Amino acid sequence: WLHILLAILWFGNSLSLAAVTIPALNRLPLVRQQEIGAQLGERGLRVFDIVAPTVIILGILRGTVFGSIRDANALLGTAYGLTFLVALVVAIATFLWGRYVLVPAARALATAPVNADGTPTPELDAALERAKRLTVLELIGFLVVFTCMILMRFGL
Image (cartoon, rainbow, N blue to C red; front, side):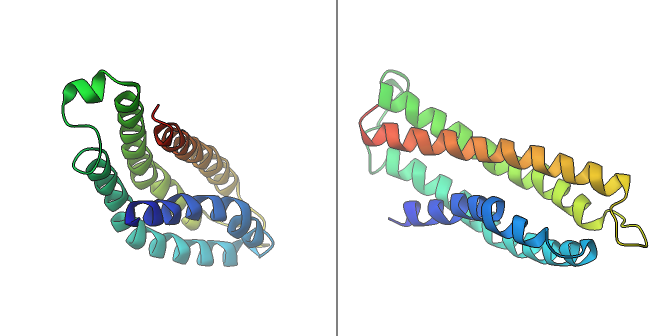
């Protein structure tokens, strides 16, 4: 249950940011968006540097020690094992993507210059577009893992 709870926190945070938090922040002046975004990012980093690896470790334990994957044949020779392996690889890749690609992009967005009149500079516009693209890729990773979890529930 802890694996599921923490996974909901991790995936749900990304969905909530994309659907609620970021659209709400977009209504604020740019400098305020950057201030709040930086605070959210730093707090999130501290939380998800613990949550995401814990989800992955508990998933490995759930599939092996407490699950049906006991050997390489079960991992590579069954539909369940292959689905588990895809979920594991994509979960690790999604964590690393968020940590080492998306976090620096978010920091660049938070520190990009703003024009004196409060309008975005070309650097800020570019940083925003990059962050949007990178976030979509992270969400795709989550959707792949989520789909694998559903498939594994049905033995696939």
